[in-house]
Length: 438
Image 1 (cartoon, one colour):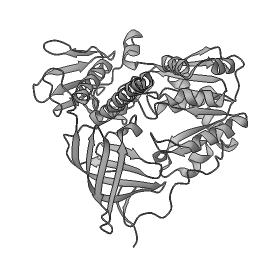
Image 2 (cartoon, helix red, strand yellow):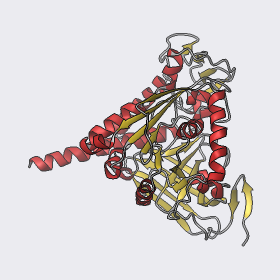
Image 3 (cartoon, helix red, strand yellow):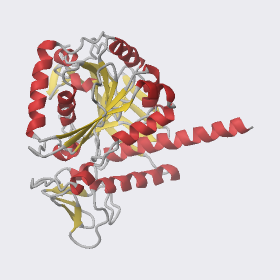
Image 4 (cartoon, one colour):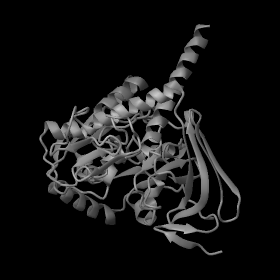
């Protein structure tokens, strides 16, 4: 049976035989690409008048580990420009390879699946560093949903201790304001941004500090809030549609508590239930049209939503259940539509079951909560039904899951995944202490 195209990079038909080769030796950045990349990214950096602050970087050369915060696709332009003339390798999600695997591998990207344990990346990283090149990591493993640094896993410190090389960080400020994740089609051209390029840890410090101390230093170095940065630096955003799409991440009304009626248009975000409206002003600050302004910055609203989800998790009342459509991403040619299924997300983790449309065979994915500290989500995903989706991964599969119910908020699912994992880890630590005491 031949594949039938049903959407942008989506096919219907039998399961694909060819899968991503996750163990292929990295090809490295080729000289015939790298000079064009450096030239193009440097021009972009100049166009945006990026103010670069270098800290202790004099004479620093690979091999070293590079850690960057992740607010926008624009991060890659700044990072590439700042690294020249040094080459490196960078783990990248398999969906970054759709339609461009050949060039992706030749500019130094190594395929991986988000939020899975991939020991192959450790082996590749060791070989890269031994060759005298840098190994770059975005520890959040996804774009920031609301302009603040997301979860940086404890495994980051463990990785640093294992490699025993210096650690360099690049913290970018303003990139989320330029191209926000909740509306990636919206660009705010020539908006001024900043970047801090820092030698965070020397080889000696890596050897002397504990994993906990390293993680603390790393999180402190990468912490960022783009909304506060914009306000404090009076970076003016005049774009009339600057708030469009903001309701994707700010899904819960702080006035009436409704989670399904938020919307946005132009420079305003509003609740369809209680009719309250807020304006996002030129400097990234929220102003209520009537009554109290609950939160000055969208990032504070987002933090409040996290606390609300946390209450549900600790009360044992959190649960999301819905019918879904499921796409499999077997290789860089695109998605195979698997069929319809049913998703349950609760304190136990993710459970998905469905029937494969091609031959009626049942498919399932079961990810225990303690195996997933975060999950990737998309808003209006272009390779699908132009709908919000959840990306779930195992070591062998990458599935994009589209809820049929429009009232299901993928932002809430992402927040709940992180809060459930934290609570389970807390319980695990308490039980360990109790056992040790006995």
